[in-house]
Image (cartoon, rainbow, N blue to C red; front, side, top):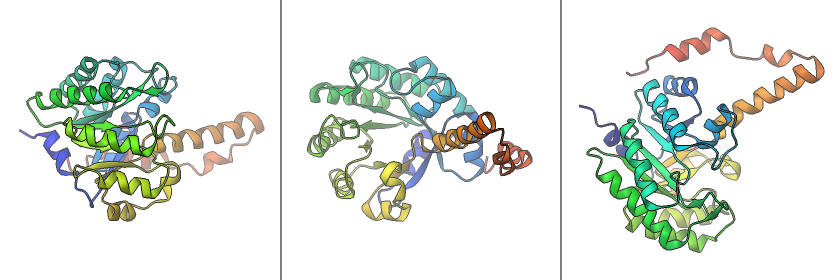
Length: 274
């Protein structure tokens, strides 16, 4: 029997990064699969858009897991869940999220150290205990599962790069399979993150890092490149721009540049390697 988690783990090769293609719904997961993606990631904010909610703390664990399960059913590729803070403050909450992620067929998931109550970060010791609980639960699933520990305080303006590096080291020791510090201030900081652990590191190719190529990330030692809500926001941007012109100006020309429906249908029905 195929071990989807083992297939997913094998993609994580420092210096030879794969793109974790973040899908926001079943259709985008199918299209990305047909276009040659190697693995699919959910995106918490991209998913939130589709159900009319804001990002960060507004989607429930049940909603996120049901969405993730839909994506698992839509593709033969490994799927990893973006599960915010694990949907609770306690280590036991993180453990429960990982356990249920395994039940719905995910190949892995990521959990961040953001306290959704005040959008700060959990104290160091609690943050480490949360990672330890998630990693232990991942190991107890009875199959392979890639547990990613995120240190989001730099991106959120809560702590500096030195604290991020401290957390990466501690999360590594606590059993995380992959480490992730989204959007460090500089490329030099990104390199320091990649050098502080021998485990795979995820980099986020949005904002100023959208201008960094896959080859450049590879040269730094990245193992995985995700785009977060980037593709979802590209789709939303095109939709909002066209809708503004239609509703505000009575101008429909943006629709003329849309991909023909038949081409989209072909991607949605392609089996691509299954």
